[in-house]
Amino acid sequence: MTSSAPNLLWICSDQQRYDTIRALGNSLISTPNIDKIIEKGVTFTHAYCQSPVCSPSRASFLTGRYPRTTRCRQNGQTIPADERLLPRILKDHGYRCGLAGKLHLSSCSDGKVETRIDDGYDVFHWSHHPQPDWPENAYQQWLNSKGVHWDELYSAPEVGHVKAGVPAEFHQTTWCAEMAIEFIHENQNRPWMFSVNMFDPHHAFDPPQEYLDRYDPAQMPLPKTAPGELDSKPKFQQLDHVWAHNQEGGMRVDEISPEESQRITAAYYAMVELIDDQVGRMISALEETGQLENTIVVFMSDHGEMLGDHGIYLKGPHFYEQAVHVPLAVQWPQRFSQGLRSDAFVELIDLVPTFCEAMNIPIEPQIQGKSLYRICTGEADPDQHRDSVYCEYSNSWTHHRAYGTMFRTRKNKIVVYHGTSDGELYDLESDPDEFQNLWDDPLSRDMKMELMKQAFDASVFTMDPMPPRLGPF
Image (cartoon, rainbow, N blue to C red; front, side, top):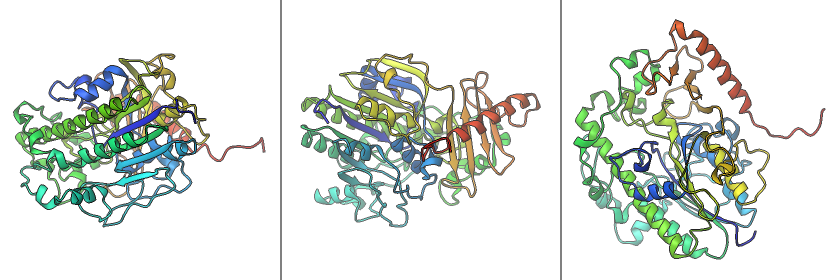
């Protein structure tokens, strides 16, 4: 590996919607540092995750393979040991790889520490979430080293699902950036990759008070809903409209007032702004060490957040744009186009082959994604990549036996809930907000059958290409 090989700073927030960045159209939020990545790099305006919950999505974009092929289809499953993560591939080619924050490719509930496969990370600052649920939580160890205690920092009362959280100086998002900055300074003479996986803006809605104060709830948008729309929507959505995640005793959604929903949105935006400030600090570290020109910087999220739209909060077996459409911006000053916006359909599995091509590393045969490299360099049409996007949910989180397949084209979207008679069908040209479910509409029967055929085809074509075929028989 030559010293000219690019570094990779891969910043992945958790549960962040596409529409939470000022440069992408949200005038109510402040994200100057992410905006600068967009200004100086390539932005994909139609990027989609491959599952609307954490583990299957993360397993997918770290391997370049669909959830069904990684076999990490559900939160709580462990990714099989023979899967090849990008850091493992890069380590095989001379890279030093590190991580701070969340990985979530194995169960870490009930006090369990996440099991690791041979993932390629030489530096592993693990903190699945900030709370002190494990002695092994590196963020909590960092707090202790500074002589501060979580219980004292996180003692503000919660009011209407919002609370003032840990001050920015001691926040997990800040800690993730600190670990990245240390790594950037310590690895200036060799190619490296660092994964920055903060827990925010994932719920709870608990930004630092100083960030919460920057947003006036009265200025926040109300959730997008249509009167009576849930009557024609799948049972999973009707249940989650009562209790988020269908978990009784948790977040009671149907009782949230408009004013409370605006406070939640203000808190969510505040969490994003803290992330943006830390993105700025990491970019500054690259500049200070002279590494910015030859570092690929990626900003993205693993999936979205419903945030009250369609009467739902958090996530689940839901495939609305708010849940599956994610921000994705990349910059590499030495090679990539500046200020380019690609309207092509892309999937997050396309990132691994893109990075491999950028680093002149062979794209291994198990990888299913399609490289975006030539779009990023300006050599290919920025608006042509895929004709459709595919997303899946396999009993992945809440709701017993919830299995869903989403297939989206430019004009339409279909969601099939397997083993039930429920489904969703949208004409996105006439109904871009996905209010009118045409699943049972007799006049949409032909469109439904054609899209079901295409969705079935997509599910077949996402089967594992491995092992390779070695001959005609």
